[in-house]
Amino acid sequence: MFQFYPFFFSLLLLQTVSTLPQKSPRLSLHYKHTSVFGDSDHSFSHGQSTLSNNFTTFYYNQILDHFNYAPQSYATFNQKYVINSEHWGGPNSPIFAYLGDEVPLGDAWNYIGFLNDNAPKFKALCVYIEHRYYGDSNPFGSMKKAMDDNTTRGYLNSAQALADFAEILLHIKNKYLANNSPIIVFGGSYGGMLASWFRLKYPHIVLGALASSAPILYFDNITPQNGYYSIVSKDFENVSKSCYQTIQKSWDEITKVASKPNGLSILSQKFNTCSPLNKYEDLWDYLQTMYLIAAQYDAPSSKYPVQRLCKGIDGAPNRTDILGSIFAGVVSYEGNECLDTTSDPSETSIGWGWQSCSEMVMPIGVGKNEMFQASPFNLTDYINNCQVKYGVEPRPHWITTFYGGNNIELVLKRFGSNIIFSNGLRDPYSSGGVLKNLSETIVAVTTDKGSHGLDILRARENDPEWLIMQRRTEAEIISKWLTTYYDDLRALK
Image (cartoon, rainbow, N blue to C red; front, side, top):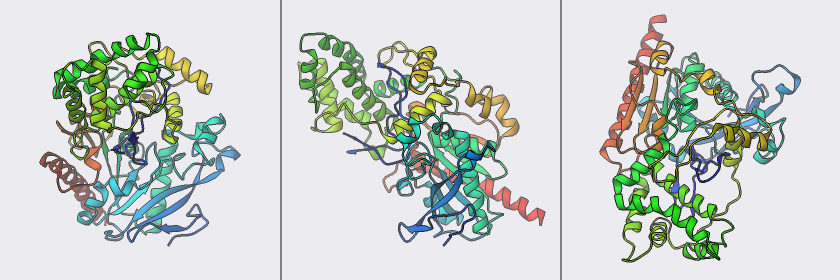
């Protein structure tokens, strides 16, 4: 069974409108395998609730539509965020803000640890903000209700989310009498994109951004569409050529068996599915999902799942057929539980389905000679599917129009600054990331062995030296931003 942390790296396999055999990879931060204020003025309408000695939850009375002056735009909803002031040095000390993404905030502060790990050194106030529509911050009660109504789902977009973050952060600065406190924002995956875009769109509010595993170049055909799947394939091939080849051959074998009389029954028994397969694509989808997750989160803390999978596949007894070897890999990775190839749509998959059908159009396809069968991204089919599902046509060029992306080396360094783009090169989404410095203050921090969003997770005693050094480098860059800011602040007094 796949089990996911309720948020971060929302490793929920994000179901978009793509069709099989291509699997839409998940945009999310973390994957787990086993699996005092209260006022009426745009404030905390539900007061506070203590989570522990150090973390307190607040709800901000957020406006629904920041960009329209029609009467309905002034509707409000409660948006959740969490504060830890344990290490804060008071006014003028920095504020570290984690920008939520396409999952409920949950207990993100427990595993998105970069903020709290570094708070004592910087005497920082730590803030974690939930993204509108997800978790407890849904204006319309539930994600399904909001997405089923074409008059309510349109308020779910990145621009509204950034404006939400701006409102809450300014409110916090006002409440804490912290007008001169510099803000550094953090995010991973989609949240990493939001962090970088927030710095570009609201430079008067935020001093800098750490954008972890943020594929901001996976739009408008800036990145080759097969970039994601090519890295997944490379991850497996680098671990074991024979494992890679077995997986590569398995897709035709599944199709071949499925075409036989009782073929689906044979596959159901062979892979110990929890319920009989209704179509072979369900099995195909399950296996693809498993491989994508293994590659995207191929981290020490996950005991390197690609190695585990390949050890099982390569270690199958002699004379085991292709599908038997694949199942041995599944058991090595998942255990002996039955395979649940069906699942109800999650809150994340419902919300991201809309976001990817409106503005977040990432043309991810499978090229030839990969571990998967070729399945190029087809924009015409994508648009048609979105029109059927939502009655709207996606805007594939909007992200680059609104935030930029084309000619980034020439353009971004001329108006942007203070952004760290961090990427682990084992992460398939690094194919759409910024992998080299664009200026002295827009910098890329990469690690050959890194995976998706690993650097902003909580530090562990057994973290490898390269990961420790990556985090140290990022903290040193942030320290330089803050030193420059405080020098400028003193010069103005």
